[in-house]
Length: 140
Image (cartoon, rainbow, N blue to C red):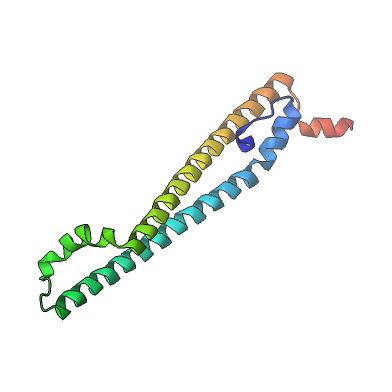
C-alpha cells in the first residue's frame, strides 16, 4: 500500500510528506468511521430482524394452538432464528462489514505509526543537515 511507504530520498521529500500526512490520515479515519457506522447499522437491522422472526415464530405457534412460553424465547433465538434465510444473509453481510472495519482500523494504526516515523526522520534529517525548507526557499 503506497500510503504506508516513506520517500526518504531527501529531507525535502520527508518534509513534504510530513506536511501532507494529516490529510492522508484524516481520509483513512473517515473511511474507518464509515465502516464502524456500517457495522452498527447492520447490527441494528439484525436485532430488528431477530425480533420480527421471533414474533413470527410465536404467531405461528399461537395459530397452531401451542404458543411458546416466555422462557423459551432465548432458546428460539439460538435454535430457530439462525435458520431463517434472510437472517443468514444479513449475518453474512455483518461479518463482511466487521472484517472491513477491522482491516481499516489496522490501516489507520499503520498510517499513524508512519506519522511517528516521519516525524522522527524529519527531526533526524534536520539535525544532520542543519537546514529546513525555509532555508531552501531563501536560496531559490
